[in-house]
Amino acid sequence: MNILRFTTAGSVDDGKSTLIGRLLYDSKSIFDDQYEAVKTSSEKRGEEYVNLALLTDGLRAEREQGITIDVAYRYFATLQRKFIIADTPGHIQYTRNMVTGASTAHVALILVDARKGLSEQTRRHVCIASLLRIPDLIVCINKMDLVNYDEQLYTSLVTEFRQLIASLGFREVYDLPISALHGDHVVERSEQMTWYKGKTLLELLESIEIDEEVTPARFPVQYVIRPMSAEYHDYRGYAGRVAGGAFAVGDAVTVLPSGIKTKIKAIDFLGETRERCTRGESVTLLLEDDVAVSRGDMFVAEHQMPEVAQDIEAVVCWMHETPLVPNGKYTLRHTSRETRCLIKEVRSKTNIQTLEEEPTQDQVMMNDIVRMRLRTLQPIVFDVYAKNRTTGSLILIDEATNETVAAGMII
Image (cartoon, rainbow, N blue to C red; front, side, top):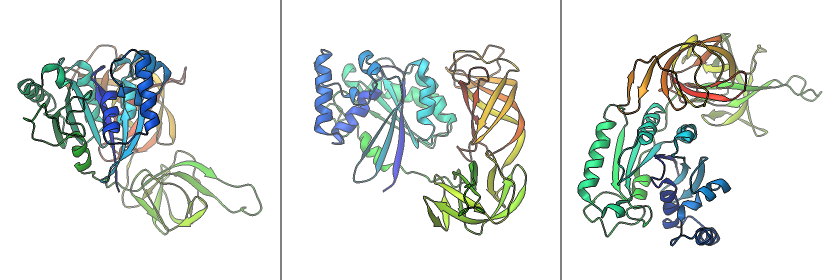
């Protein structure tokens, strides 16, 4: 049974948490005691209905304020497949949390309040979903109960949304009218909107195809294992997580950035030896030759070479209250390698209203999405983000505060 990862996105109060709560409840994916706890919390808050949003708002501050602050991950399954949900905040100051939640998603579930239409934050989330190469979008026009289930209004909002994303390159875009509060078209069909003939949300989630990315073999070294004992005196293993493709015993590999060539002697996995490892698995590789390898190096398939460079171009989402410093020096973290870098040039900024890139002379502030050119102190080994999300992504860290200030995709 395969796993579909999807993230919620949209503006504040569009009903993301309520939708996820409704999806979990109507698909019978929560226990009775969980429902009773939510019911009790709703009564204490003086609400006339059971607030299913409380199923995902796990932090005390979230429950008290009635907003989502952090990314809430929830898991459920049907007979067709398993699901991992990332419920992300809609407030503009928590845009960075949305980037985190969407970074591994197969599908972005965009909510639009039928009364308010497309907001700036909704546009920003759509732009980020496009940059993160999420292949499919599901657009839920929510709160249809508050607009008398108006088909004409729904159609006009869908038309506006599709015009907005026409040039963003999503593989498929699905749309449906829902009421998360009452459950219309979430799991069960709605008696109020018989004019909608498409699938319910759950039916869509169960039927969307998951494309397994075919990526070249990549293994960033996280840790060199050299036990200091007589029993393992000649053991030298390289621990890490396979970031692309697969490796097998006997495979010819190149160690980058040094360029040394060798072969895989053995693969250790949880104390057992294996013949093969694939993307996403954390293993220890042993090499046939005694070569110099350290944290931050990368093993790659000999015939599938990545880029190795110090000058890179990336699209970056600025995630900190402190503005970008022109020609500023930051620490760049890429896979398991860290190196200092210099921001050489900010080439353009994304206009959130039109989602087009425009030249900019303005300061780069929190939540701005910009294209920039970086120069690293040491070479990094990478693929463009479109080919490999792991080896094509990076973060920037403020050297003075050690805080993450930006996340980017190498283009």
